[in-house]
Amino acid sequence: MRVTEIDTMGPIDYIVIEWPGKQPTGTVAPHLLDLVDRGIVRILDVAFIAKAEDGSVASIELSTLGEDFAIFDGASSGLLGDEDFEEAGHALLPGTSAAVLVWENLWAAPFAVALRESGAQLVASGRIPTQQLVAALDEATV
Image 1 (cartoon, rainbow, N blue to C red):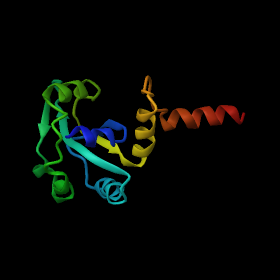
Image 2 (cartoon, helix red, strand yellow):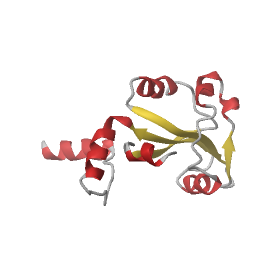
Image 3 (cartoon, one colour):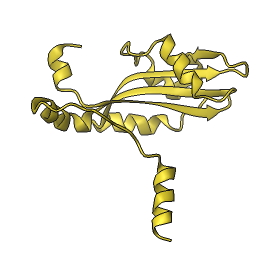
């Protein structure tokens, strides 16, 4: 990646999504592709892992997941490695599989560029789980 490209990038996020059992179905893939097609995100990395009952973590080849995931074959920026998969595996329950997804938030790139140009820097970030938000709203309405 060239410096000029980095200067215009939006924030980068990652998630680890767990599925019970051995493999995810392809029902999520079209929604992710829609975000890409609309220019909302740019996929940097997609990887799949499985955590065995003994706690070991292994990569899952995209080719074994069916054609719904074939579009993601080669989606690798080089950011993720075996150490990252082992770390992600700590969050998984035994006997599950997971997707590790890294993306650029294209929608936020102009805002991020303006912040960088003003000399600002990100010092904290986070997410509020939907369940926590719903619980807080339910509590507020009581």
